[in-house]
Structures are given as C-alpha cells and as structure tokens.
Length: 426
Ligand code: GDP
Image (cartoon, rainbow, N blue to C red; front, side, top):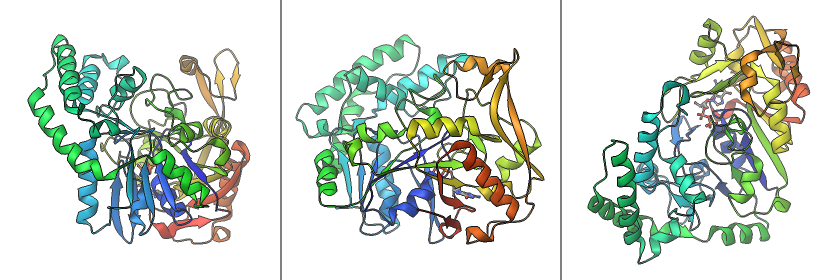
C-alpha cells in the first residue's frame, strides 16, 4: 500500500478535506504535518457536515489512526474543543488520536501577540493573519523558545507558562494592547495538560513503525503551495511549509518512504486575505464563482477572492511538490460560464513574459495575465458519476488544464459530497 503526500496546489481551500476523506479509505494512518487551527477542512460524510481544524479527517473513518505531526502548531484549547465536538457526534477518539510530543504549542500569548501585531499594522502591511497565534508560535519554534506538547509532561511546564506569559505581557503593554492574567494562564494550562496527556506520544517512532509493518500512511497538508513560507507569495504566506518537503520534516517519515504526491487543485483560483493574485476577478464573474462555489472561509467566514485558473501557479506547484496525480475540484462551479479563461503566462508592460512564478511579486503589479479562452459546457455536472459521462467541453477543459501543468489526473470532483468524486486513476 502506498505512502501518499497530499498538498494544496494553490492558495489553500482547494477542497483538500474531501480528497483526503476519499484517500483515507486506502490508508491506515493519517498524519497532519503542518499548520495550525487556522486551517479548516470541510468534509461532508453521510450527509453530515464536519469542519476539522487540527484533527485529520481520517477520524471520521472508523478504525483509522490519526496523528497530529511534529510540524503542526497546536493550540491545546482548540484541540480540546475539537475532541469534544467529535465525541458529542459519537465519534470514537481514544486510542485513535496521537499528538506528537515534538509538536509546538500555540499559547494564549501567541494569539494575543498575533492580534496586537496585526492591529498595529497599516492597511498596506497587514498580512491577513487569522489572529490565531500561528505566526508567533512558529516564530517561537524557530527562535528556540517554543513550548512543545511533550513539555506538558514536565514538572517545570507551569513555571515556563508563568515566565513566558510575563515576558509576553511586557511586549503587549509596550504596544498598548491588553495584557494577560498570568495566574489564569497557569490554571488553564494545568487543566489542558491533564486533559491532553493520554494522547501524547513519540509519533516519529509510531509512524516509522507503522511504515515498517507495511501500513499505508497518508500525510495531509493544510493551506497551499502559494502560502508556503519559502515558495509562496512572501510575505503574504503562512508560517510553515505546506509543500511536499514539509510533509517529511513535519512527520519524521523519510522522503525515501514516499510513493506518490497528490496535488489538490481547484478548476479556478481563490485566495483569502491580502497578497498577489494575478487572475483575480473583481467583477460579477468573480462574485458568481464566490456564491456558487461557497467561497467563504471554513474557519473565519471571510469571503475568498476568486479568479480564473492560473496555469503558472499550477506548473510551479507541480514542480515544487513533484505532483504525480492531480485531484481537481469544483468543476461544477464553472457549469454556468459561457466562456472560461485559463491564464498561461504573465506579461509585463515592457514585454517580458513570465512562465514561472516570480519570487519578487512586486513585478506582478506591472503584469497582466495572458489568457486562452475555452467555450463553457453550460450544463450541470454535479450529478455525473463517471468521467466519460461529462460534457465533452468539460473534459476538454480539464484535459487542457492537465496538459498545461503536467502530471496526471487522479480525481475529479464535481460537488461537495463524497459521491461526487470521479476517480480516474487513484
Ligand atoms: P480545504 O481547506 O482545502 O479542505 O478546503 P475547504 O474545506 O475550506 O473548502 C472546500 C469547500 O468546497 C467545502 O465546503 C467542500 O465541501 C466544497 N467542495 C469540495 N469539493 C467540491 C466540488 O467539487 N464542488 C463543490 N461545489 N464544492 C466542493
């Protein structure tokens, strides 16, 4: 059974939750490898809608083991809430969920610093963070002051909570932001540590042991390639590596043990928050895609910016991640478009053509997308269950996208439910 990395190929919200849910059926162990509770996968299983932020959606499948990997930053209170919601739905958690003792924690002061920092920025320099403390938690990890899940087992944990709350309060006060009640911090973290202890494990050893026993491992990313701290539209990015390399560093499974990389990509493009977005549509077509595609953040409810498919992004993503198979989603959202555009390159005002995504995104201000146009199919596709039954023009569109970005089509999704997933090769 193959070990699979699944990544988002655009700016996140590609519909990874649903594809992960489908691939989970072929896997034994599902590992989330980066990000925090700012991500939200939406999964519709048996007619019920679940929004998962930290726990892999594999938890919705009886008998699958789920791991929160070391590359994640985990807010203990968010996790406790998520466990509570799933339990209330009758989903078995105990014995099926492990949290890496190496996972860094998002602490209350990270949240406070995140919100206060974003509030201090002017409109132009706002990062568009969700204010959940993810950036400061990764900052603390890299700055070697972070607290890890395994620290909750240490007798010195509460001293560290006190010391770090005090230090954060000094910064918050200097910014004129509200400070934290340090005694309250100690109290709530004592309780959180008690609640989470049973789930803490050496998951690096666990994942590798599972691999040795021939189990199939699915490494799932949150967000997307263009939000990667190294490869995305810096600084309008997330603080981790949602690309395939991050799957190995975020789980402890060697790159040599990976069999395939699946890239999830929408048949058009969206992004949340600020930052470059070359194919953005600020007109009624963009609004139509937003409404029809339900393009509002699963966690924050923020409207997503919408635009045409960007093959420059797709190609770049294929290259950076080494995508073997694509899972293309949301084809049905384009059902009512008489003409569909695909961006194949960016053209700068002085004639320079960009076929690969530039590091210096300020050049994009001087670029326009080069589009090719395709006729729309103007028929509903969301009831179709076999790829061959799609309207010819829809197949031509999908096949053109794959031709432009390389790789092979593995899954095509034409609706939010599990049943609307056409398998062509995975
Ligand atoms: P993720 O973070 O990549 O998992 O993306 P989200 O869960 O935030 O957004 C995906 C949304 O699109 C969810 O509401 C899904 O139910 C929905 N969705 C997924 N695939 C399709 C599809 O093929 N068509 C339509 N119409 N909706 C889809």
